[in-house]
Length: 297
Image 1 (tube, rainbow, N blue to C red):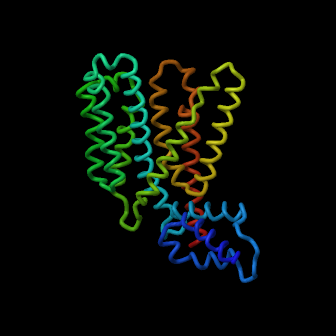
Image 2: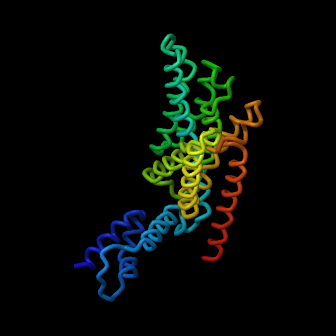
């Protein structure tokens, strides 16, 4: 009875793997994990659970594909475009809410003209990407980079991050149209989950470091370290995240470079130092994937 319960719980963990992989390898993995000897265990060990989850992340990242480096790059580009558009939409929505809170209700049409049109078009582009309509997304992202600015130059003149989002995403989406036929697109549910994870990392506030209160600084430092550690634990297994996070850090850096207060550049997690680290991580992901591919060959 305990073996049946243990097997059921192992199979629950195996649901983290893609369905095609489970159909081919699930029984083999269960036999390896449980073995032939009777056992009284009812739960997988923490080490086994962590190994299974990391294995699932590696499979999602293309480690078992015929061309893992191609999967890493092309799916990473697609995920990066989704992530930077989602981040731009989130920042834009926050700014619109803030504008209405502080006087925008007196002239709502001005807020909608200067920020709302851009927000709607970014959201539409993101929706097209999620739906797998890459060509539609390519047309929309170019229009989003141009049309709202023609209607109102507010976002452009202020160099706000949400204005940069379609500008950064456009070459990624256009490049994605040339994805090789033997490289599968990132599954929709997985792409949304990756995007949500990257957004979650950006939502960790580092503002507490500038506060005098020592307790707040400790809490903020703990949040930043825990968030970065969790991201790296996932990203070192599914290395597409190391490619996908780069455009979101570039978005923040472009905004910060437009700020004449140079001291401000080093105070935020999306500033220049983080971008340098992101470049190194992305390069490391590509090199390590190529090395594994050559070793496997």
